[in-house]
Image 1: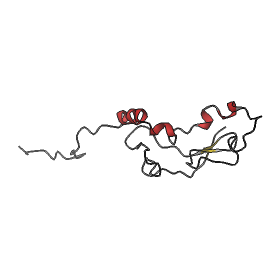
Image 2: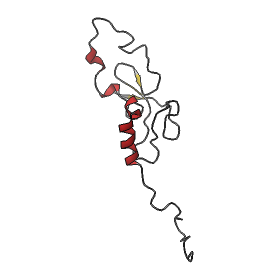
Image 3: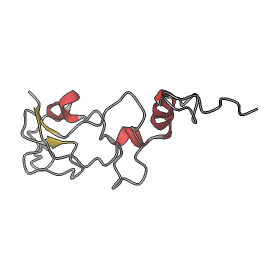
Length: 113
């Protein structure tokens, strides 16, 4: 069970503390806050270490499968977003601005010829 954490590292739909992080601004994807997974580890806070993490408590008895699955992956603060391929996919989802100088109620181009 995932429990949401309200603190987020996002500013204006991006993660400025990550040099290669993409911007989610103008895309249909909203930045998601960090969450606590079933092992008590906060995912998506950009700190990457947690005293509850199996990585911090690794032993020969630790089954690596304990760290598999979606509860270990944050939907918008994941290193995978920093790859060129995923940034390109995100760019393709950005909303296109078809008429950059349009006013919502007044025809500003009237009699401009």
